[in-house]
Picture 1 (cartoon, rainbow, N blue to C red):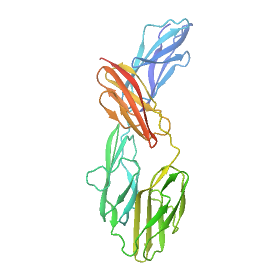
Picture 2: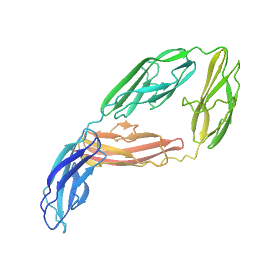
Picture 3: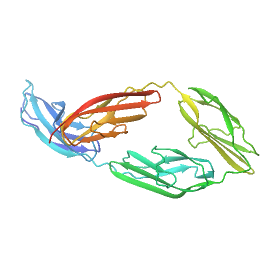
Picture 4: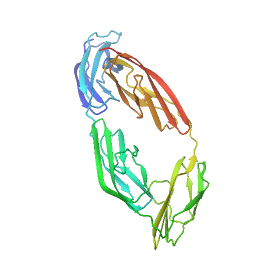
Length: 345
């Protein structure tokens, strides 16, 4: 049959491109064989006249190739192609808030990332000393010493990086001497659902209590001796703040409770958008691990690694590469390996 005509990309985004075309008028025409960067992807039935590539890398050129096939299986030897580029990744813009922003030492502060754009990693510096203190999206940090602290957040992504600096953002006061916050809890460990009884042992004239049972900066109870039920596994930090006529004080017990759940060891699984092609070859990997993994270690076979969940990697030289994923959680870890073949230029 004749080749397709009017092949063009009609829509594109950061991770997808859609091409359309006009089918040939031959009566025996049956389907279009679609290739992406030389790799066969799909047979598109007569009349559909479009195909969308997904899972692509932002700001990267891809070329579609089409060959027509008739009802008896004859393939047109001519490949009609069209290149197109995915949209650039949106530049990240760093923004954050925190609560509380002032109080006596030790002060546990919940930071909340409000950044926009395409973000792949975060670096928090809670004391402006040039050291990365956390890479979590919404970390909790405890200030042990009085003082005024400047906080930095740097976000990075395919579109670049950005930093927000808030000068004198956190104010930590001297601990109040009139009251002293102290408490115990029982039990300190167990399986979900776990009922825990907290007992106040504070000293001084106390008029109010504020309990935070999970270190998220939210007051969970104002009762003197509260009881709560933990329904999720994990390690929990507990904070008690007491107030009275002579001031206030806070006790923070980091990783105080250890609660286990019905967590299973991960079963590592992943897919890739291409397994062979010419160098330089960019491959997008997608994690499909079962049983709730929370950490990932990718080894791309060329000496490089990644801890992202769904990374992309570019192979610059020809070779046969073993790609492995090790997925882990509190119950253990497992690994899976696949191979990528990269031919020469």
